[in-house]
Length: 391
View 1 (cartoon, rainbow, N blue to C red):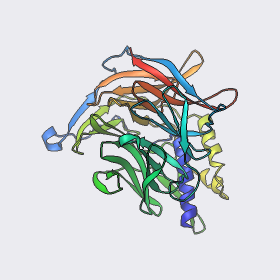
View 2: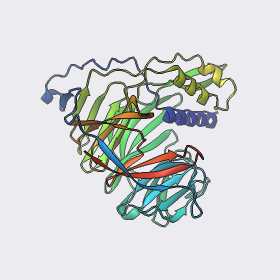
View 3: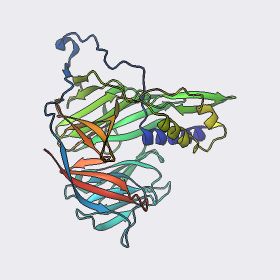
View 4: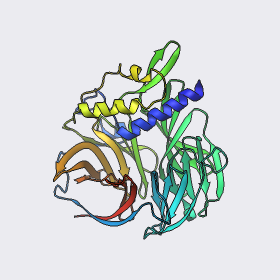
């Protein structure tokens, strides 16, 4: 029963990532009783609706596209990172391999295979390039962290605790930070913890808000159900300068933690208009639920009362200069293309710009923006990078 429940939770988690559904009845315009900074220990800054540079835009120029050809095959890219020489590392979930390309998109090498043994992959959720181009891999299927050398030889690996699920946030020279979700039966608790490269916990930022799960019972069997647009914690981080950013997706209050792992600043953006959760999107949610291979699960989920509005924040990401990109649920149509709104904050929380992008950034690093783009005719996935600059 435990394995069955964990498999269902993993599938529900995948659905939640696909849709980025987040909703709460929290009123984002409410303000906390803030007191003085000396009493709180952190600064509160309420930003205006207009950014510091309201006319700023992002200029994108396609740099390269990597796709299936006679030398390499990319079927289902999931995560990506880039080293200091602009070599590109891609995990392909279709054949469970990490594939490495040079800065011109030329295939260099690959390693990995599907399995449960040492160095094998099951369901990789993130990878990061660490010292000397070693590769840090997080596998939520195996519930394990692994380190490989540049040639793909396994250096070390360690298991997570039985009730833990890790997702990488950012690295520093000798350690890394993860969101660490601990599952206790039908409940979970979420922390951000610091670990060394042997898997030893060093310190913690404390407890945050996990993805909420509603439990329905059929007889004596509990079934977890992900509620669309539930309020949960999102994170992003950077190493230079060292920052951890946290935001509850319905509040648009950004917590900034500095190097000492203490809350240093809260950035509040009020007067935000909620985006409706359309009937078409609700139907898309239920179509994903139909894929769950458990009898009567779809009928249980149909009991869920879906929200009228989406969350305010869809996700957080940072570039390697320490700027925070807040991906909102705002969208607009320009010349037959749909664009998503991104609010850009400096490492210290200055609201500098609002930009609109018609692509989904997976990584922003070394003055390039990387994304996965499907070909409209063939359905093949291209790993594409764009040179970008703010103008």
